[in-house]
Image 1 (tube, rainbow, N blue to C red):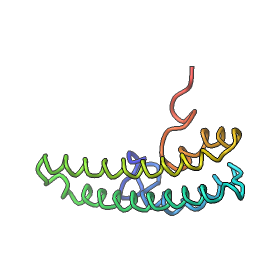
Image 2: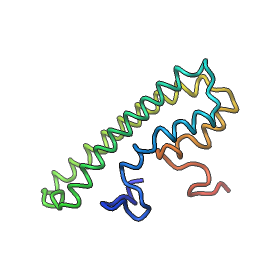
Image 3: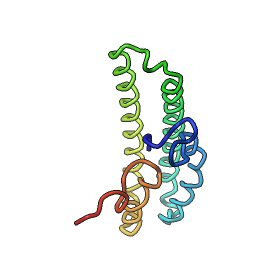
Image 4: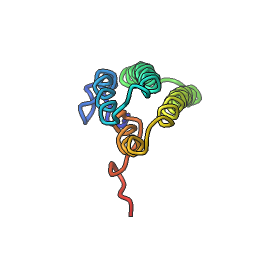
Length: 140
C-alpha cells in the first residue's frame, strides 16, 4: 500500500486519503458480500468501527510521514532519530493490526462456513490490509 503513495497520489493514483474516503463504501460492499445477519450485526459493527478508527489513525500517520519525506526534514534527522521514527510508526501499525485482528476474530467466530470462505477471500485485501489469494502469488 505505502509503496505507491506520493504527494500527487503516487503512481497508482492513490494517497492515504483515498483509503479513508472509500472506507464506508468498502465496508458496505463487504457487509453485503458476507451476508451479515441481524444476529451478527453487533460483531460486524464493532469490526467496522475498528476499521474506520484505525484507517483514520493510519491515514494521519501516513500524511505526517509523507510531509516529512517531501519537505526533506526526515532526511535531516540523525540516523538514530530516523530509525526511531520508523520504529514508532511500525509499532503503531502493529497495534492497529492487533485491534483489527481482535475485532475480526469476534466477527469470524459468528460467521457460518460460507461467510468465512467469503471473508477469507475478500475481506483483508479489500480493506487494504494484506495480500489475498491471487493478488500476487499463485498457489502451486
